[in-house]
Length: 98
Image (cartoon, rainbow, N blue to C red; front, side):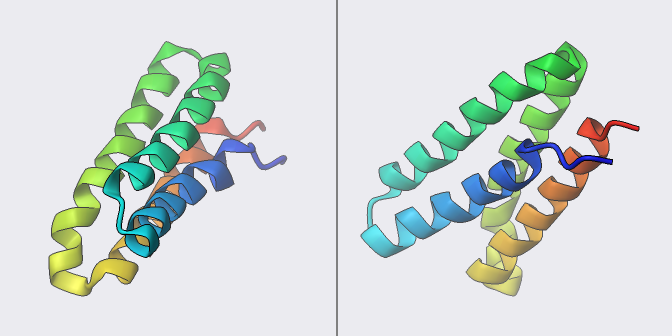
């Protein structure tokens, strides 16, 4: 099986977006990183069909949203890594070619 390139890019978008916002103090820069990675992934996911695209986009955006309340419980970095790992897993399963 070949790893779909959106697996690491989707996780990198979540981690990179957090890093950009945290280390620059500019939340909008973090949002730009998150959106750029997400847009690239959506372009690639469209090859899988509309249902997969919608599901993976919902997963990506849901992970971003879930990371905020999760951070209050387990901390910011663990939260970002947890939702990134979950997103990578879902993306891997949805895009794998057998």
